[in-house]
Amino acid sequence: MKTAFYGKTLAKSNVDHVQKLARLVEKESDTIYIYDKYYSVIKEQIHFNNKIELFHHHEEIKGKVDYLLSIGGDGTLLDSVPLVRDSGIPIMGINVGRLGFLSSVSKDDIDIAVESLKYETFELDTRCLLHLDTRDNLFGDLNFALNELTISRKDSANLIITHVWIDGVLLNSYWADGLIISTPTGSTAYSLSSGGPIIMPSANCFVITPLAAHNLTVRPFVIPDNCEIRIRVEGREDQYLVSLDSRSEIIDSSVELNVKKEGFKVNLIRIPNKHFLNTIREKLQWGLDIRNH
Image (cartoon, rainbow, N blue to C red; front, side, top):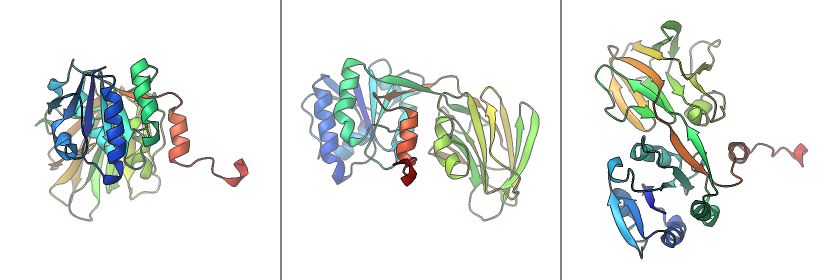
């Protein structure tokens, strides 16, 4: 079992949990691959007995590791996706953060998680991504997102106008603070907090969710993920912010955004008894009504 560790920070309260994870993985693997910036954060507090290989780029683990463990919260897991890309390496999210929709393995389940890797008793949730094309290749080779693409105001409080076409047909010109194009995975993130629906991860669709639309009849809109979306932005300001998950760039009104489904998918590891519906009930505290008891 060849395993890679990825993370960004290490809170004092999580040192024992990460050390436990390292010990359990070392029993099953002679070498642990560790993201170099994460190792610089944990090296004084987490001790390894086995061989360590540091990596920085996705090519350094492609074809070399069986699993990547993302140690943190959902934001950490999103940041780990560029290290996996189209390699097919499954990602397991170890939640030492807060809410944890994607990082579904809790601190208390670390033993079960490593055992499921050892005996391959886990299941894979295959998640689609969205792909962004722009004239100047705005995000370089990181032009994909597991959660969402977001267009928003940069500095001012002025509304922006986002013109959206679906397969060449005008959908709407949104007068709003911005707009979210979400995958099913991202439906429980920014889109949900902006009034969008929760979508099952296996659904083949995107959700278009306006941010504080200046028209009460405008609502989130679900479209098939084989559609192509074209977007132009205008307003009183000269610049706007475009984000793919946690990566952001600045554009002006001359930039056209073209969104479609990415050509590859990402595999997330789900340990036994951790179905998406269980996660929804747990994280959103559904069923806590006294009438259910």
